[in-house]
Image (cartoon, rainbow, N blue to C red; front, side, top):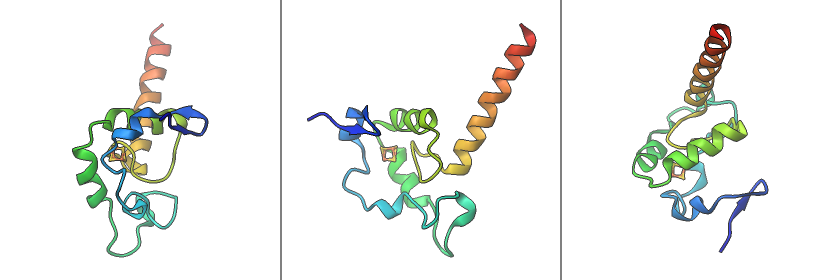
Length: 99
Ligand code: SF4
């Protein structure tokens, strides 16, 4: 069976370790990242599942490519993905200035 998400093939999701897990483990009640955690809530449970996921790289790549701002993707929280994006942009600026 072919899977699509936002109109893009996401066959890798078929092998996701979170496939049968409750969505609320991976998403806080608000969509603005780690700072929005309800008291006592964290991404720890999701992170543990992601750490053993065979499609972790595909998942993180998908979230980074599409600028997904909420939830745990590829074992990275929204705040962690923003840090990765800042590092990418910093490297792009460095390469641009060096050329
Ligand atoms: S890395 Fe985590 S969120 Fe992504 S597919 Fe695997 S278990 Fe799900």
